[in-house]
Length: 203
Image 1 (tube, rainbow, N blue to C red):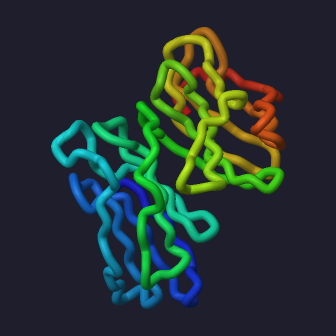
Image 2 (image 1 turned 90 degrees about the vertical axis):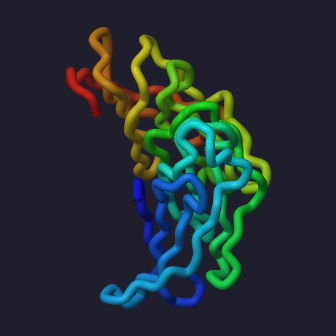
């Protein structure tokens, strides 16, 4: 298991959502209401991901507002997948996945101005910080105005959001800062930089 997220769903039970290191059925749901006797609810393959391609395993997972967001590392097929878990008895993937053409090292989700956004720290040399509008889980779109193509060939590695502040970390960058802080109050219009710090280390 590469990653786990836990939430209480509409039936009042607590569930663990797992990104599994398997080539099929990469997403698993476990009822952990009784912590001493967890029960598997089901395992689900990521749509259109080739089991014999590069890195088909589940990698990152997060629950938010009735949906679970699962990513694979850069692979043959779409890397981002959305599962509707609003009804624990009928969990299913929405749509057929979204091509990222990169690996999301970490991502966070937040709602701004009535829309839902996924903020991603990626391993790409282009757009190390990328943002997707996930309001409609069947039609995920990139928010081009918010993407950040940072100087140098240093990957994004970590990300966190608190209120309207987005904190972004990258690998050690000899010529500049590894920690950057952005104004995420309105991603549709961009992410203005608020500050940065050179910590001379991977974040």
